[in-house]
Image 1: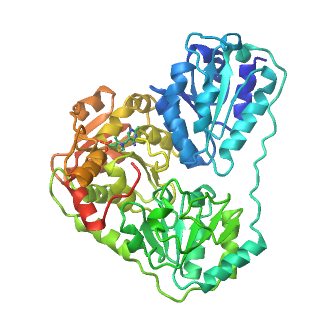
Image 2: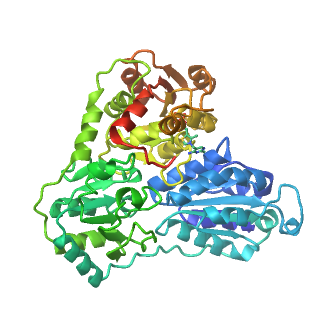
Image 3: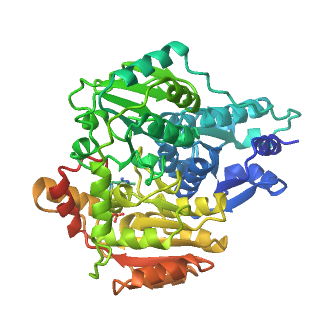
Length: 543
Ligand SMILES: Cc1ncc(C[n+]2csc(CCOP(=O)(O)OP(=O)(O)O)c2C)c(N)n1
């Protein structure tokens, strides 16, 4: 057997169902071996699209999404999506072909040191320098990618090694089990919760990754403690939950409206600092913090931990629910009330360009609560993160660690493949859409049904928002767009353009119930952006 065939067996052994990528000269043996496997190969139109697809596939399934490229330029094109998965803690394994090991020591056509290139954007990067180590490298890459905190791994596979013979076999897959939280730490945490007057919970995406959402909802309601979530933890508990405050992280005043300013104890669960920096919700640095997670807290002067409860989050929360006393005070829900007011305010607005709030209203009321939205990065993300109501985890996917534009359309393709029964919408700015719009062809070729909703402002809207806030003028943000309806049609998709306010719900309903790809071009009125920040304080989110 060729090492390339063993590699494919190892992937099957890891239960890989789909690989996203582009064939090249230096991965010919691997591509050929895939033909005889159970794995679906999705040919994409750009390696960045493939990496974003693997990224979102990993987020939604909890198993490493896999992307594949050739050496050199193919591999460099993977980097953004791989980095996105890594900083957002989505399990992903990226594979690149490489030139023969006989020409890696010198200047050579398309040759780059890929292991060094990928090291800063992965948890583990390795080259398969001999056929004998295929099984170990593949096993380790999947193990490390899927282990908490999950992230990206990279495998380089030189073409002469892929073609070499081997008699090795795949290694047995065993998944590490998270340790139980220590009794001592649980007792300390319970004592702090009991002593607190105004505790509050900040939940992050780790709760969703570790499937501890029910335990969290139970913890919050039994102990009567209000809960805010980060953008990437939307749906971590249902918005209708009596303790839910909503998604925090857009502007300075979240600190006040969530109640962080009044809290004497902040219980962070599965929370990641890259998403919502602690100086924003803990500027005074003097409150007690309990850190409940699978891994130790990051060091930060605003994240000084009173107690760390490490281990299986589900078990930690369940144990604490039984050990701590219920809090008498009723939850202050000013963030939630403000969000509901904002959500409802413009539901009957009939202006075009449409207000962001009205677009979100129409989108939410057109979709089922368990359908999936993949959001791109831009001003639209800020509105969606804040206002799109979520009742279930993983129903609004947001990149907020690396926060890279261009994820929405490839992400929607992956979501549809991961969960074909759900309706899927890519919500995107006009700029982010054109960064990976070539994947419309991939979606159409795969006969996927999905909807792309473009918020069209002919500008890098979020940057303009920031510029106006900071300098009172904007620079170098405006551009022209193609005719998105004709553009969609040229790919075999349906195209719609919103001209009247009542168009959008009608178009969304038609597109969501249609077979195939639909693109809706929706003009957006971003004069609402500055009104929002005037009302809520300085925008503090990451771009
Ligand atoms: C790949 C990448 N390039 C640049 C940025 C910085 N950035 C963040 S949002 C944004 C503008 C997004 O414009 P658009 O997609 O039209 O969305 P809008 O803000 O108008 O809703 C830019 C340039 C980024 N996050 N990712």
